[in-house]
Image 1 (cartoon, rainbow, N blue to C red):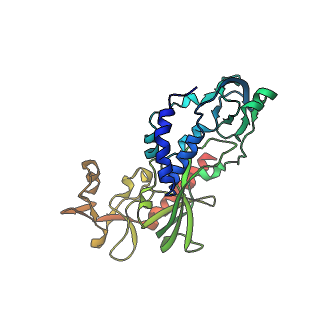
Image 2: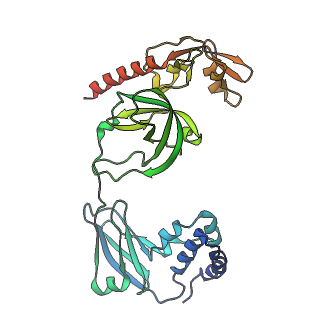
Image 3: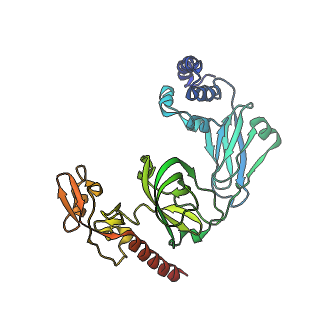
Length: 333
């Protein structure tokens, strides 16, 4: 029996062969995917039971020849050449009791997958012959240290040059569920130390951002603020805003830094300071709601530049933030 997608396969295979000679990875994946598709064969109805070894209640996915996962690995621009893909023809889910049924060939292999469990695969012929009951075991997990969520009592602030930024999925935790699902592991070279103790010129830390890669990682160099959470360094994007040097060479947060939500609890007030022209902010592309933060008495508008007139010294900001964090920790305990 021939299937509806046979015409699609006939169109795509020549394309794959053409680009396979160019050793393009995406087309190699596509060819592997197509080879895994059943073009013509006699199918049988396979019934069985598949559960996990812990709760045993939630559903798991069963895929013929791992077709679904192979399809997901194909780049989007290559998927367009396949046209519509009906995943229901190659996969199913178990019910609450672990029962499943799916049509497959005796020569096919069924892949059993569930998040945070070690996947298994069994040939259809073995499942039918031996009446195999699948039981997935959990992946190894690690304990999450809740102390790392407490407010920082130490900060590291520096000018740094980007070495590498790589997204990494959070580990599978035994005692909690990840809220961020992953973070950006950053490695930077410290080019100028601004605040805190640095054990070396290369520093590693994690940055969390729900909207993709953090803004500071898009530049080759940046001023970076890190909080030390029981030995784990985490990026704090808004804790000390507008860090720049005064005309006298002292580091300060220009403008009205306590206007930031991260600094709303700080009781310090901005005071007049002399800033060099290099501390000015280009506001030509800012929206009106943002421009309101660059008004008198904190800034002077000169064309498309906002020149800072006031600020708070960085050392004072850090000391006050640590004092407030210590109080917050005591209240938590």
